[in-house]
Each structure stands twice: as structure tokens, then as C-alpha cells.
Image 1 (tube, helix red, strand yellow):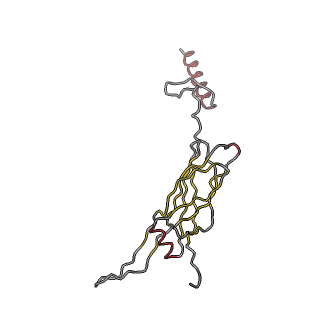
Image 2: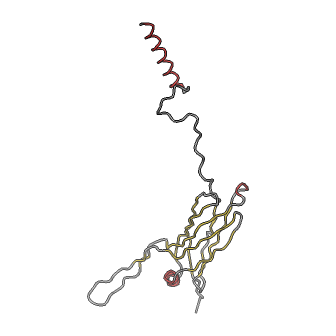
Image 3: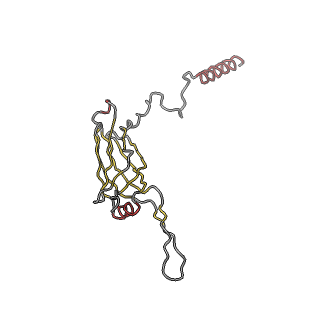
Amino acid sequence: MRRRRLVRAALACATLGAAVLGAPGTASAQDLDPGATTPPPGPPPPPDLVLSGRHIRMTRGNVVGVRMGCRGTAAQAGEACIGSVTLRLANVIVLEPFDPPGPRPPVQRRIFPFDFAVRDFTLAVGAGTELRMRLNPRAARLVREREGLRVDLIVRYNSRAGGEGTARRNVRVYFPRRPGV
């Protein structure tokens, strides 16, 4: 009887010691399959998308050109940046108080951020381009009245392998005026 207790105690100590030291012990029904492999890694990172950091000029036809490039490593040959570009008003614009007719007090109007233009693109690794985007009439009118506005240039893109990326830049869209006319 005493011998059985000693054998049980020795077995318990050996199992406990193996668990503490990280040695493989006896597997229970709740343990994961020890022969299972690790899950496959996610998609590789996408190539870098480079945006122009300069001011963007609006033409008479309400078109702006956004310069962009897709760069990657030699291992990413055959990849591309595929996504969409959004031009969005950066900040709320507070207009001069409007004095409605009648006894009502002046009203202060605000223009909240909205999308000026959205365009899809596909750009191969190593290539650069100027993406031409036509602004909507409301945005073009604001740019002309204000002689320039700060906008956020937001790009969401994927690679062909499925890696997702984003790029963001704050730029100024302006409409040039002829001086002295």
C-alpha cells in the first residue's frame, strides 16, 4: 500500500515537472492536435503608393490632376496598386452670416466635408501617372469662390495578391486668377 502511494507521488511529480519544464506530457482530450501546422500567413503587404505633396490646380473645365506612383521591391514584380482616389473637403467652411428677409436674426451657414470627386485606378509597380478627376459642380464653385480650398486626398488600394493599403495627404486645390483684370 505504501509502495503504491510512493509510485503515484513519483508519477505525479514527474508529470508536474515535465509540464513546468515544457516537456511534452500526456495529452488530454481537450488539447489541440499536436501534429497540426500553424495557419498560413495573411496576404503579403501591398506595394507603396506615393502621392504628390504639391498643390493641385483646377482647370476651366473643373478637372484636377493628381500625381501618383506605385513602387515596390523586385520580389513584387507583376504586382499592381488597384483602388480608388477620393478628394474630400478637409474642414468645415463657415460662411458669412446670411440675413433672411423679415424679423428673423442672421443665420450662420456651414458647409460640412463632402466628396469633391472619386475615381478608380490601376497602376503597375514601377509606374507613375497623373490621374485626371472632374470635380462636381458644387465643389468647383467653392474652389472658384474661395480661390483655393484644403482637401484630403484619400486612397484605398489593394495589391493583386490581396494586401490592403491606404494613403492620405492634405493638399490645396486652387483655381488661378489672372492678376490685374
